[in-house]
Amino acid sequence: MAHAGPSATGRIEIGAEPGRVYDLVSDPGVLAELAEEYSGFRWLAGVTGARVGARFRGINRRGVRLWSTVSTITDADEGKRFAFEVRSLGIPVSRWQYDIEPSADGCVVVESTWDKRPGWFRAPSSLVTGVWQREDKNRANIAATLQRLKARAEHR
Image (cartoon, rainbow, N blue to C red; front, side):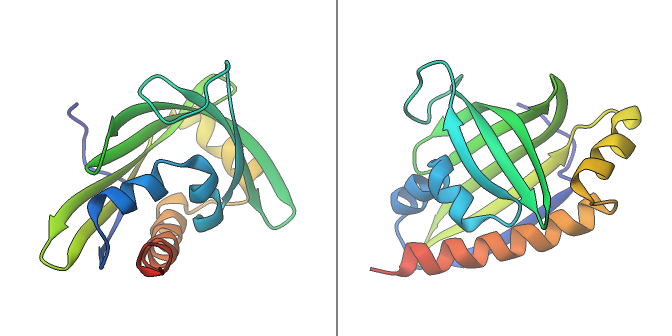
């Protein structure tokens, strides 16, 4: 799937097998523990696992602000890539993608996001989230998430 470059991205080396890291990032519950704004989820339509086409409702929190989204998994390539498209009120919001490459000491993980909001939706969504500089905030959030992912994956 061809995409223009991500609006924010981060990279980290992790001393763990690609499969272990994939198991962590492809579990929306674990991802909620690692992420900055994303704080919880529930599967939709009777789905119980991460597979292409599966949908989940994400609960997002920033300080006192709380909002929900619906995500659809687009990529679930075990040990290599996990990605999902996020919508709010049926409107495209973002794409989140985790690419995992084997390395000599484990793997390299690249977390990327694409801002998919239509221009007219940026101000209302910024009012809800309290974030006006979304790219800067996402870069900082990705860096924090990747550090937590590394700590979790390397911990035995």
